[in-house]
Amino acid sequence: MHQLDSRASRMSPNQALLTLHADYIGGQHANYRKWYFAAQLNLDDAVGQTQNPGLQRLRSVKGGPAKTSGSKSLDSALNRWRNAMNNMSHYDRLRQLALFLMCWGEGGNVRFVPECMCFIFKCADDYYRSPECQSRSDPVPEGIYLEHVIKPIYRFMRDQGYEVVDGKFVRRERDHHQIVGYDDINQLFWYPEGIARIVFTDGVGPVSATPVTSLTRLPQKRLVDLPPSQRYMQFSKIDWNKVFFKTYFEKRSVAHLLVNFNRIWILHVSLFWYYTAFNSPRVYAPKTKLEPSIPMTWSAVALGGAVATLIMIAATLAEFAYIPTTWNNASHLTTRLVFLLVILALTAGPTVYIAMVDGRDNNGNIPLIVGIVQFFVSVVSTIAFAIIPSGRMFGDRVAGKSRKYMASQTFTASYPALPSAARFASIVLWILVFGCKYVESYFFLSSSFSAPVSVMARTNIERCSDRIFGAALCRNHMPLTLSIMYLMDLILFFLDTYLWYIIWLVVFSIGRSFALGLSIWTPWKDIYTRMPKRMYAKLLATGEMEVKYKPKVCSTPTCRT
Image 1 (cartoon, helix red, strand yellow):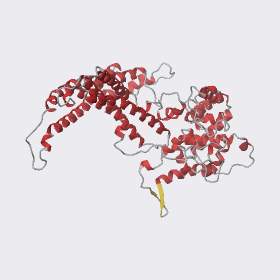
Image 2 (tube, one colour):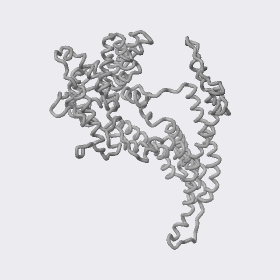
Image 3 (spheres, helix red, strand yellow):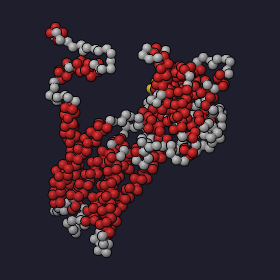
Image 4 (cartoon, rainbow, N blue to C red):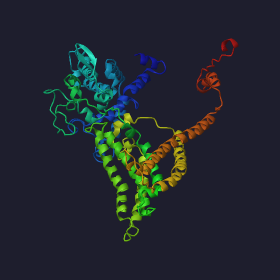
């Protein structure tokens, strides 16, 4: 009522109720509406149990049965939603608002899982609008919401972190990746498969007529097999211990450097390989020759694409350790891994062929053609791996049209887009940073490194021995020194990126300051003393406002002191 009173002071009462209902439930930016379509609850409501048993996932918005059946189309569902919200009476809007706020107000810790609260509200609203509730003569027992809905979920949350020892709650000695936390509980309600996991205790609830796959491993007594109007009163019979599971293992591991920064490694290690392989021909030349053949040079340089692919494969394998293999991401990672293995064969396999036939006269130009094709395939693969995020490869979960990934687009990838000017400036910044870095690194690191490598690669140290290591240490002195030099060169290759980032960031910052009308030499004291005037000029002194505010600037000597 306070929110309605506050809005009614600025607009009409009907408009206040309409906007408040839109913010909580029916509007485009309401979390309940986002969750409703992300979890595909519109299929459960529109189609029903007969045609859509157990909330089967809709594959795509385009093609197939999604367009042949109007009730399964997302566009038609959105239109039905908008029409329902527009045609809703003020009583229903107020009733839904009151019910939602009462569910949220008594939710306790369950309020930290907002999509779970949305599911609870939907079940309560379906029951309230059902004939069973409307024809009920006796009131619902007091406290049934806390006792049957909130308390079981809260107990599950509590038991994940605490246990009873001598009548006192003691913190469990568990790491984060062993605790089913708020995020895991919340994510269960994002997908139809997650909601379908809500099962009853043994011997309670209806038996599902749909077959259960080995992937889900669910009992046959599920909440979604009940009509929506009957689900709320069955919450007390749900076995939450069989429902929730870990959706992501928060392990403290060095593998995060691969999973989260794989493109950084590709941009540096792969390019370093291209430069170094081209300027170190004597390292992979045959022992009887000083220089390798032209096909072998093309192929050796092209192995930079294989290096980028190996980094992607290692990142994909490391990502398997952070998600359960029975969840939706497993199929996505498996598809990516298969494609990466094919690309690895294309970028590394020709090198084996060229090494086997190198030096034969009866092959003609075939090794050269294979080496050139391998090089361009490697370059394209490296550019793709360096620019495209891993999650958007082989099935875009962010910009794709498939409803299979609608939950990811709604929650995890829901971030505001940059304006065109800011996005253009960001792209230009990084093009300048890496463009200058690659040019400078080639001439001052890789090219200048070729002369020492050409000498040291064919230098043999003889007639040396040590009392402990014998001749093995000094005989391998040159390869060991070369390895250390390559490692130091790679470290400098990384540091060059930071150098050019700072240089161009300063240039862009100065340009941005002048574009805003500021001077880079303005003292901080002047900036803070001018702040009231700037607030007045930018925010308060607008032509649309009837009341003009004056800045409170201290001008007397006494006030300044």
